[in-house]
Length: 314
Image 1 (cartoon, rainbow, N blue to C red):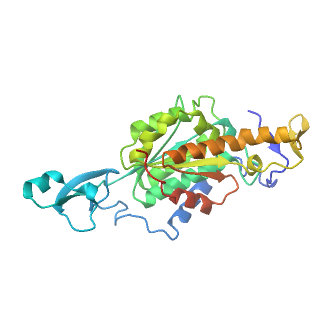
Image 2 (image 1 turned 120 degrees about the vertical axis):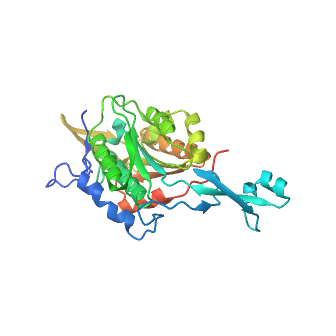
Image 3 (image 1 turned 90 degrees about the vertical axis):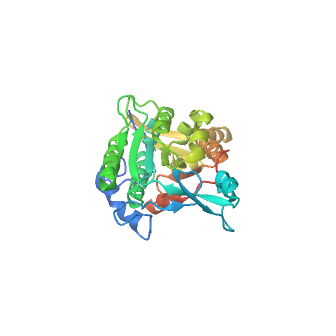
């Protein structure tokens, strides 16, 4: 696949390849950022302890019932015990020992491009690494998959060993587009079979990939799973030059005129249109979704992954 590099790109010629392909050492180094100033929910052995919880659903198993006290969630009233004893009781739930964090990587060809700092594919790998290290910090098992016709998911594993498996996969997947990639829809369909209530799903995707999949895929995921969708963008896509955009290609120089209203409108439809539609669609299902520019810092990506969902689909 030929890559067209905009002349406005800020590459360092002394470091060929920097920003165009992910580096394992860079992804490993992001672990320190995740642990910096974070509490997490790890136990003494890196895994959350089993403890009664009043959370509803979300991967919880029923533990016992106790007398109702003012302030308890009325939705958790145990009506059978209440009817049998004549006194109001509420349910307590037991948290799962290990939650699953699943990272779904969109590897559409449009991600292997960038005009500021790094390719969108490299930014996707960095965001995936942050999600993997966050899972380690929280005591989760971590897994990853893409829409490949040949390669299966990276199996769930806990601790640094699990994260490193995922990081290695992200480096491989985001080095270059794969001919056997079947798209985000296949990846999410496979994800549904692995996820259980209470799991965490992180989707790294091109906005156009999200728009292309059926809307019916999202409600089931949104109901019992924490879903974060990061939509990869490039500054040039969202803020094109006022007049002309110069490109360097293998055959020479090429200029794209953007000083006509019709051309700028088509540009907006091609780039802002899918992003706006993806954000609107995902917000309707209460999913945590946000654009992530390829020139954004790792701190920005980390904060986007912390955003809580906006509500649950009914």
